[in-house]
Length: 557
Image 1 (cartoon, rainbow, N blue to C red):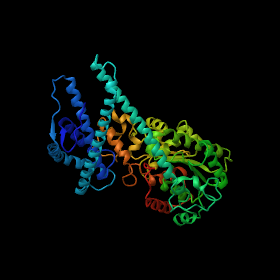
Image 2: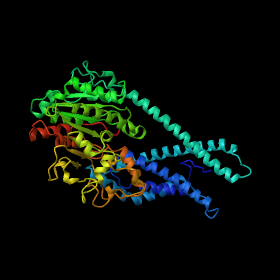
Image 3: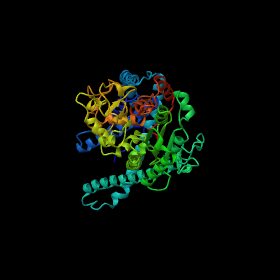
Image 4: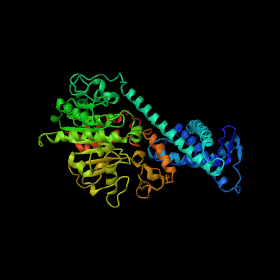
């Protein structure tokens, strides 16, 4: 049996050695800078995980060697701490340089002494938490072993085989318990999300305009909109605010939203959204946007408000909520919901739109951020189908597991970088990572346009399973983005681990970096959908207004 020694008394030397190496590796540069507490927490977790790996490896080797290797030695924790401090003194200059190079790439100031104090506290909390979990797992293993081992047949006649069988059975039993625990956690998260979805922010009042879902005239009840839907239909600029910013006469925008609490299947809810579009007169508007939501039903207010400013309110927006859990939970536990729900909406709206007179119907565009981008693309067979079925698309922060995006990336013109591809000289599809980037190609851009917006340091776009064992394209010479630190190199397993942490903290950065696309989405929508005849000053005013937005996190939502 492996005995995990309580931290604070004595520590396994092999485990502590690997743990200190893991802690040092956790300080290597990644895609995004982290808050001090986050870096400390990660380093603490890395130390504890490395400790466990070191213990398992050494004791496994010792058993396999049949006495040729000594059992692992133990040392007092304070001795390990002194060794760790000495190692930290050696690596600190490198770590400071690494972390500051990542911060510089996104325009953040260098770290200071207070940051490292906070990081030290985070390290203590992270290592304590991981050791506590490790002790719990070890205790559970011992209890299951005590239950299983005495009942294993052949315990006396073939003790070695019985011991191996007992161990394997215990591991399987633990996996079953863990699976049941994850299922229970999933259920609890779903129930908690559903409860939160029904808790409305009192700042958002029920709309009185018949042009909004949830109003007294609406086919969708206010009580069924959900927390995210309420903010969408009760938020955004009105005609007077749009006119004030743009300087041109404006209309009241149409916003249609169908919440997850509306009874019926996805197809039935999608048809209800179409009925709402007809009720509000969406067919008379200049531009109709189908918006793919994130896991909780959220839409980036900077993007949808900017869209309405650009077209002086002569717009209709339609969205459908397919779930109430945040995007990370939704992507892991219920990935089909974003595909099924968004696809149902896209198909219903595009079928309805196709019945309208071709020379007198709104421009049809699709928009999605993060899991919303994934859901939008799931509604089409490929990029050609998307372009044939719509009149434009703006897709931001597309997750790395999205098939159409991957196909377009791989089909890029020879010599163009993976992080910012060029395809067919930009005839139909273009990529951008900064305002104005969609205009940099000299050739003509077809009237039906697909714009991918992706920052070179957005982990949701770049981190996938292959990063564990293979150097990714986006880190190779000539392919990497200027927003990625020159000090970042691929390290097997480590880069994937760092990327997962970056993914969790992908919005703890300034605007126009990581997974934050509010400003850039407005430029993308302008390039794809045009505007209401606005002059350059009006566009600048819209950009100024949108840059003031303090948007919610698309990762949490």
